[in-house]
Image 1 (cartoon, rainbow, N blue to C red):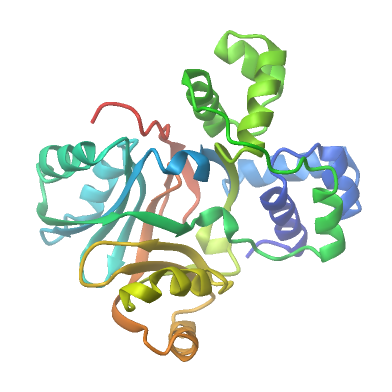
Image 2 (cartoon, helix red, strand yellow):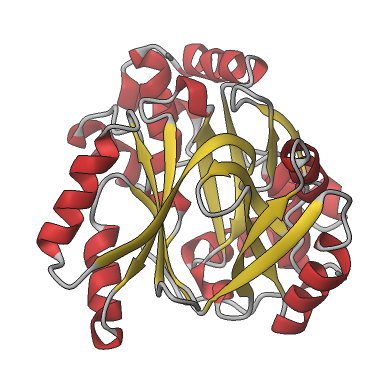
Length: 333
């Protein structure tokens, strides 16, 4: 487990990923040099990291899908590692449930989903079958989940100077390049990003501010699952009446354990990802969900045995970051 100081720093960066160390230090009651060194130690231990991905303002231009993969005996982890090397596979999990692997795909269009599953994934040695669930709407995504290790006063200190949300700018090639650069170093300075992209620092500052305020780019601070206060990942396939789908998704998104909630095609019409302190917590959580949504039916469930990839980052067997795959969802499949 990480210390309370570690968790407070992670939480501060979840609230404001690019906040100056001086502001984070003031919120946590330590000096900026101390807090920067503490973060560097977490990064060196591969216990926490920052990443970047397209925000909700770009989500309508992309296609989200989940793929359930059945593998030959003994081949699941090998297939998972091959699949994780692809930029379109945002997350890859080896699970105990209705399949061996769960892949979260993001592509530019439905045709790319088809090409990926039929021509690339299904042809991997060890893959026996693949079933695709298209997700027409992603109601809740990973950045909402936080470790909740700082007080409301500390949170207010971090958000006081944050600009108000703005209009989403048009997502262009410079924004795509900026997104990929931030995926490698989300706290890179404007000057560093300008040198990387070959443009002026003022251009970077303007585009980045507009992209963050308009929800075009989202930044996220992740934590190694084995050291997290909620190390267990579980997926729930749920079914609700179609006319109650929107309301049910909103209510489920309010559960603090819920990290992801998406509408999906198939027998179940909602797929929910939760992070729990132990497998036993699932029983109480499921009961609470059904209690608040009387017409909700739990169709199936899966527990992650090993997370191979999360948010474009490759993970080792303890859930620590071991590499990055650029999340270039517009690349050819």
